[in-house]
Structure formats: C-alpha cells, structure tokens
Length: 96
Image 1 (cartoon, rainbow, N blue to C red):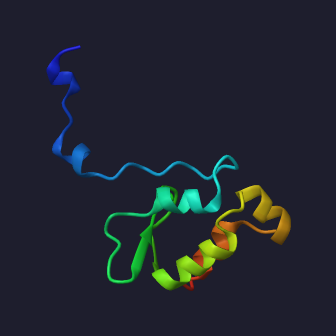
Image 2 (tube, rainbow, N blue to C red):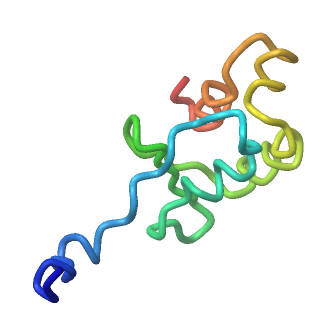
C-alpha cells in the first residue's frame, strides 16, 4: 500500500468518529461516554448516537441519569422499565 493511500483527508481527521450502535455488551454509562461529543461545554453536554440528531443536555441531568441507571445494560433497563433507555435519556431534554 502506498503512503498516498494511507493518508487521511482533512475532513477525515477533523470529523468525530460515528458512535457505535447501542447493544447489550456495553452499560448505559459506557454508551454515553462513547456518544459524548467534543463540542460539549459550559454545563451543556452534546451526545450523538450516530442514528439521529445530536442531543444537548444539562450536565446535572446527565449526571443524575448516569448515577441512577449508568451501571445497567440496555436489556436490563428494558426489562426493568419496559421501555428503551434512550427514550428516557432523550426526555431529559424534553425531546422524547
């Protein structure tokens, strides 16, 4: 492979990687760490799961949600509450 084929474009080096899809292998807290974008600031955290639009939430709301549910796996949350954790997470910003 030539050096030319190994080079990345400016756009590729600047773009944040697409977040992995939700699965039961990761806890909710691990998903949120992967989905957190670098443009988060001033008490407002920005998340992007790669499947929809970005979601901006107050850090305090995210911290409380993560403290309460972060250790759960998505399937455990589904079994306990009979709904997807991502819906409840999005509802923190009034975007359910």
